[in-house]
Length: 172
Length: 79
Image 1 (cartoon, chains in turn red, yellow):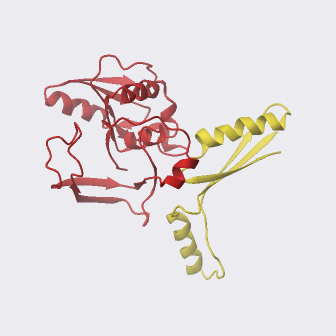
Image 2 (cartoon, one colour):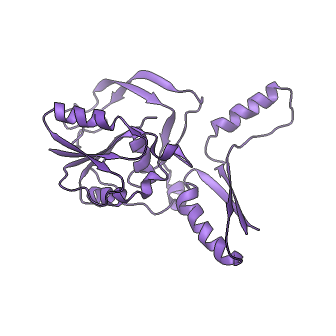
Image 3 (tube, rainbow over the protein chains, first blue to last red):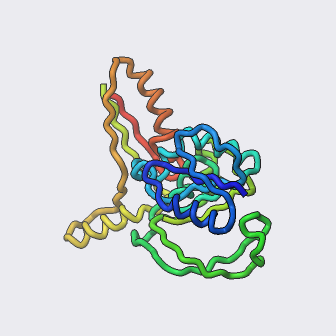
């Protein structure tokens, strides 16, 4: 598979993502956020970090980068998009994922091993998991996602229809 | 002209910063505080004199960019 790993100012672990993908025998290349096209891509990874210094809201400015238009189009056409950490926040701000992120209720940074339950394996990202099975996963969070209720969605900005293939992991 | 924008968390959204500040104020001996909401304040300096045009442009910017309507409310004043 061909992976594109996005790079915003102050992205981090982007090189780690490229390293991991290549280690698994796939091809990976970095795509600068000012690029308007993704090129030949099977999966886009939006890495973590502190895009635009987390100014205003995490991911709020990065969503306007030229590359995000290409990512939206890619996702709308059924492309695979994976957001990690700040990448998840960028996808949320871009309207590719529902909801918004607010700080953890106790204002603490949570660093712990958690158990994730496989809610569905009808997705390329979880196809090899058994439904209902728990898997251990390290988790670091400052912000937790909230999903909009129906009432909230009515007042929200218009969002791009998110692809059923978009998988994400809420983190910092 | 100047635009002043106040962005606050929606009342329905839990505001842990506000709750923490409220508890700290109470700890310092302040009483009678019902709630604290922590938000953002933006002061934007503008060219021109057309307040209505500025209001429309910034209202759109508030909705699409400066606030997140899912979790935040905003107040916009032009002076």
